[in-house]
Length: 102
Image 1: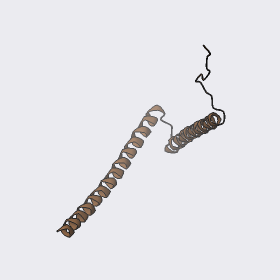
Image 2: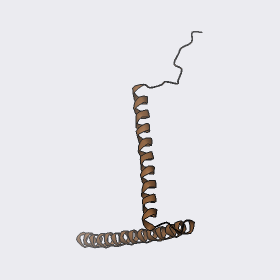
Image 3: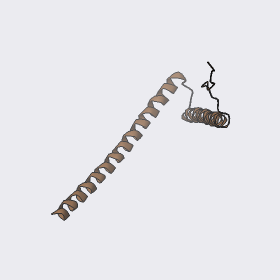
Image 4: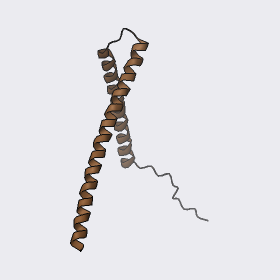
C-alpha cells in the first residue's frame, strides 16, 4: 500500500515538474514577445522624433545609455563598499556611555 502511494506521489511530482518547466518556457516566450514589442514601439517613437535616424543609431544610443547606467551602478557599489569598510575600521559610537556621579 505504501509503495503504491509513493509511486503515485513520484508520478505526481514528475508531472508537476514537467508542468512547471512548461510554464517557465511560456514565461520566457512571453517576456521575449514583450521585449520585441517594446523595441518596436521605442523605435517608432525615435523615428517620430527624428525622421533621419537609423536603426543602427538607435541601437548605438541605447547601448551607450546602458553602458553609462551600468558604470553609475558600479561606482555606487564601490562607494557603498568603501563606506562599509570605513565604518567597520572606524566605528562611530553615538551612544553616551559616560557615568555621572551623583
